[in-house]
Amino acid sequence: MAACRAVRAVLVKCGKSSWTSVPRPPQTDRQLLSRQICVSSAAWRKNLAAAGPEKFSEEYIKKQVEEFNIGKRHLANIMGEDPETFTQEDIDRSIAYLFPSGLFEKRARPVMKVTVQWGEDGRPFHYMFYTGKQAYYSLMHDTFGKVLALEKYQDSMRNKGLFTKDTRQMSLTGSRWLLKEELEELLVENISDHDYTRFLQLMERLLSMPYCAMEEEFVQRFRRQLEVQSSKQEIPAVQHDENGVAFSQAEGRRKTAKASIKLRDCGTGSITINGKSYLLYFPVLQDREQLMFPLHFVDMLGRFNVEASVEGGGHCAQAGALRLAVSRALLSFVSAGEMESMRQAGLLTPDPRVKERKKPGQAGARKKFTWKKR
Amino acid sequence: MAARVLMKAIHSLRSPGVVGAALSCNGHTFSSAAAAARPAAPSVDAGVNEKILNVPLTQPDYFRLSELFTVKDLFEARVHLGHKKGCRHRLMEPYLFGSRLDVDIIDLEQTADHLQRALNFTAHVAYRGGIVLFVSRRRQFAHLVERTAQECGEYAHTRYWQGGLLTNAPVQYGPGVRLPDLIVFLSTLNNVFQTHVGIRDAAKMNIPTVGIVDSNCNPSLVTYPVPGNDDTPVAMELYCRLLKMTINRAKDKRKRMELLKGI
Image 1: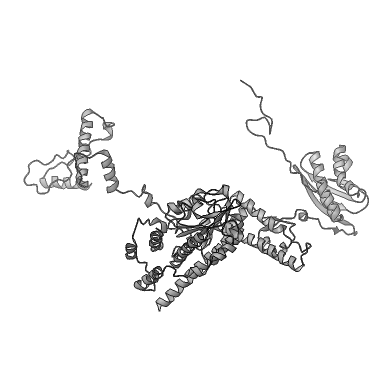
Image 2: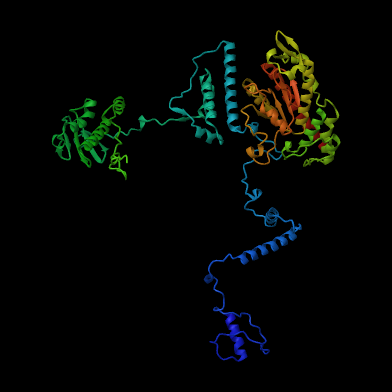
C-alpha cells in the first residue's frame, strides 16, 4: 500500500495525469529526485505456484553442484582447513562444531536429581550402601540378630535350669504376613520374589523358637489383620406390632426379582405373596419347596407367618428371592450357631448369577454361528 | 612394592568427593605425590593439614599395632589350620609351614608379618578418612562381619555381589558415588569355592585389597594377603576384633591430631 502511494506521489509530482494506466518506471527524468522503491506490480511478480514443480534439468543440477562446491570451500576456509582436501566427514564435523545441537548431545540431556545417599565427603550414610539393597539387607540383619539373641537367652535359661517349652505364645490367628508389594512399600526399595521368600522363611524361623513372644512387637510390624467374614452379616432388628407379636422385615433379590417380607412370630404358618396364598401364586412344587427350605432347615415350619411382596423376574427367580429374604429375616430369631450353619448351607449367600449378555458375531451369549470349515 | 602401592592409594585418597579409584596414578613417586594436591580442610591451615597427613608416614609402626596380637594368640585362635592336602592351592605353598596328617599348617611367622603389614595399611587408610568395605561370602560369619563394620563405622557387603558394583558404580548408584578405598576380604572364596569376583574388580578399579587367604585360595591379585584360617569361628572373631581395634585406633588418633594441631 505504501509503495503504491509512493509511486502515485511520484507520478503526481511528475505531472502524469492518469493513475489507472500501468505505471511505467520513470525513464531518464532528471527532475525526479525521489527514487522509486517498488518497481513491480502484482501482475509483474512471478507466479511461483503456476510454474509447477522444480524441473531438475541438467543445467539446474550443474548449477547446484557448483554452488555446493563453492560453499564447501568457504566452510573449509572458516574452519581453517585446506579447501582442496575437504571431505564429507569434515563437512559433517564442522557443521556439528559450528551449530551444536542440544537435541542430540548426550551431555545436554536433563538429569534427574536423585536423593543423595552420601554426605559431603562422599561417605555413604548406611553401612550396607554398597550391597545395593540396603534397607532389605539391614532388615534381614536385624531379624537374624534377634534370632541369635533369642538363642542366647535360651542357652542362659538352660544354664540356670529354668528352660520351659510352655511359654506364652503370640496369637497369630486372624493376621497374615505382609504381601511383597506391602514390604516394598515399607522398605521403599525393590525386592525380588526370592528375597521376599527368604524374608518370610527367616520370620517363620523366628516364630518357631520357644521364647519368640519377647519379639512380639517386632513381628507384629510385619503382620496385617485379616477381615473376618462371618461378622459382616447384618441381622434385621426384631420389632413388635400392636398386639405384641414379634416380627422382622427383610429383603432379598435373585436375577431381576425383588422380594420384601415380614416374618411374624404367630404360630399359624401361613404364607401370603402379593395378597395371594402361596399355593395359588406358586403352582409348581419346586418353587414352594424353595420357599419352605429355610424354615425347614431351622425346624420352625409352623411357627411363622410370612407376608411377602415380590416383583420382577420369573417364577423361579421370585422363589429364590423370597427364600433369601426369609433366611435373612430368620436371623433375628435364631442363635449364632444356627446362623453359622445356615451360612454354610448357603441360605444367606445371594446368588450372583444374572443373564449373560449376547455378544456380536455370536447367536447368543455362548452359542456361536455354524462353523464352516471352508 | 608395598610402599609404592601405599603411596598410590594415599594419592588417590587425597581428592575427596571424586571417585577414588578413578584417579589412576601411574607410577607416581613419593615426592611427586607429596607435592601433588593438597585437600583443603575448612578450618585448618593447609600446612598443618599436610603435617597431619604426613607425620604417620614417618614411622614404620605409628599406630603400635604390633602390641595387638602375638604369634601365640594366632595359634590359640587356630589360625594356622589349613585345609587338607588335596585342597591345597599351588600359589599358597610358600606360606605353608608343612602338613601334619594330611592337614596343611600355615606358617604363623609369615602370617604375623603379613597381618602386621595389612593392619598397618588399614590403619593408615582409616586415619586418612578412607572407606573400608568388609567382604565375606560365608554365611556363618555374615552377621559377625556386618556387626564389626557397624561398630567401626565402616561398610560391609556379605550378600550377593551384583556384577557391576565396582565397575559400573556411577550407573548403579548415581553419578558422583565414591568407591571404597580399601576392601577387606575376610574370606576370598564365594559359596561355590571360586575366587570372589570382588578381588578381580578391585584390581581393575585400582582399589587395594586385604585378604585372609586360606590354603585353598588364590593369593594372586590380593594386595596384602594374610595367610590364615577362614573357617573357624575363633579365627574369624580374632580377625574382626583386630580390624575393629585398628580402625578405631586410627580414627581416634586422627581426631586427636586434628584437635592438637587445630589449637
